[in-house]
Length: 310
Image 1 (cartoon, one colour):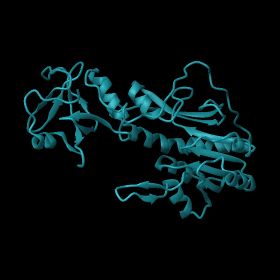
Image 2: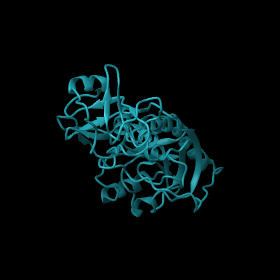
Image 3: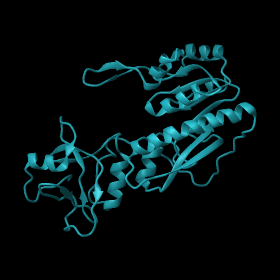
Image 4: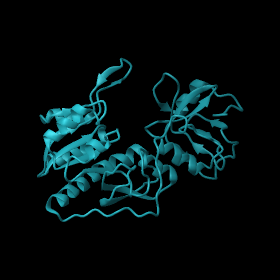
């Protein structure tokens, strides 16, 4: 089939690579406009744009996919279908009906679970033991379209959202190609999503990423891993924001500490929670790089009775 590929971040790159290596023809790439990044605030192209340009594929970066110029271009390209992986903008009715086989999205959850922008983060934060990816035909509703195929992936006890998303992106690329193959030869038919088991996965805000030390240790562990690397879990220390890497629930053999209270020695730092304490991994003070918690504690010279949050 003639395909347009729509995607933006690193997560979408494995799928574009897989489609380029398949029997399908990628006739164009739709991605978000270059964005300013870094301290110099220079314009940076998306990972998908860079790969497309390496292969000489036309790239389209409209401010919004409803722009009349892009709608006209898409009509002229006449793709049989459009493959979507983490494009980053809602697709309007004006473009959904152009390809005869529709827009097929690779979504990183087992639909109808975790519809929305942050399915991997929400799955980890909820303590799901198994997640996966689904391919479905995009409708105007939020991830509500009929499903073509699914794959499952175990959630490991130490997974961050970044770890799990990377695995799903790699494995999901094969699912997307297989879906396109099945649509092309007529062997695959989409099935409506069940009405039971629906859950929503809205984008995580920076405010939501703040750690509440009164919660149980295991819930905090999942919360921090779900926020890693984006938007990044954080707390406060001496009135300033302190970034947090994943923690380790250290068990009941550690001294009991009030929620948020710190206990540091030369090699480690533990902090109290609503249940048992957790061992801090890395922290990131304002304006500095991430560092081992013990190194931070030595420099901070934590006083007796000091803690995090609150």
